[in-house]
Figure 1 (cartoon, one colour):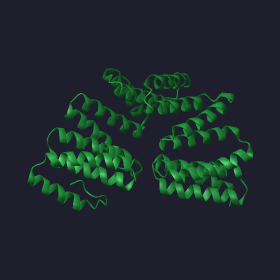
Figure 2 (cartoon, helix red, strand yellow):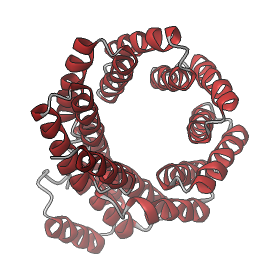
Figure 3 (cartoon, one colour):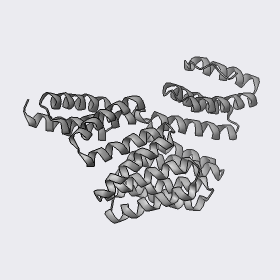
Figure 4 (cartoon, one colour):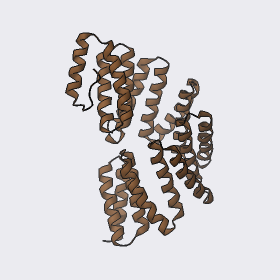
Length: 323
């Protein structure tokens, strides 16, 4: 096979990932990995494995993602490709973080950061600072998390990385919600949304809309909150890769409907949410939604309860109902 074909496959794979066509991208990167094995191009074989790891991560297959990242890492360490080793360390840190294994995640991030600092990789340093902020935030140390985000933000401003700036602004907005500083949260999220919409970064725009929905739910401005949640769904419902985000938005809409005493509508949202969480094997989220559903069911009239039980049976959910 001529090298031009490999280059073309690489371009097609990158374009497929950009358009969230992950099945197509997977086939192309697997093809490239096999081509590189045949022609002993280990450097690009590691790149293909790395990208397959990213795809699996986006599809919430964390075990599959780890398998590909470690395949990539073995090659990169053997080749002493230090820059790329640091990149893979970072991704392994993200996987550990997604599993809530924060000690392991910090270990990978600090190993990645050490390499990036030696190489003066400012963009890479900023990304790792941001992830360390995420870990600190999840542990509940909001002041320290803000310091990590602002360290990342300063670098991203200097290098004019607008996409990463939008991520920094968004997380600072989430911190504002968690510290009940709604004014600050709105300011940060508005900045994030302005950049993401300017760049056509739909995934982050959808996330920002969801977070704005959360803010207005806190402010008890429920109709405005629902409008933001629906704006989020306009993007996330189009692609199965964002099922976790869709499920969370469904649950949020279920909560608002319950507050507004629209119990049947609330249960419809909760059942849709539960079905997705079940398919993603997100057991903790399944438990939370079941708890909310049980509460709403207890508030419903006898007639509505009959309707809700019928909705449950028709949904095909395997989890036993809370009724």
